[in-house]
Length: 67
Image 1 (cartoon, helix red, strand yellow):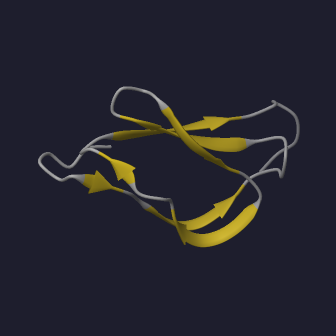
Image 2: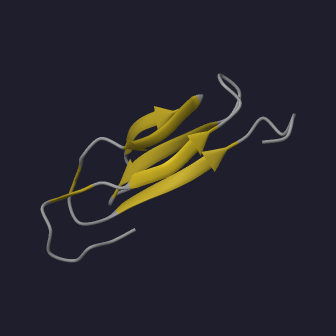
């Protein structure tokens, strides 16, 4: 995700739920440096601020179970 020209960026999830401790969402900065990871039922929430105008969100699954 990108918003050209901003100094920091973040995103809000309207509803966030993964299989706790097995599936997760990782957040990376513009240079693909790892920032943080989220897992579990977090409902609506904002991720932490990421420096720069671009970040990437990746869903990582253990491949078991359905959500």
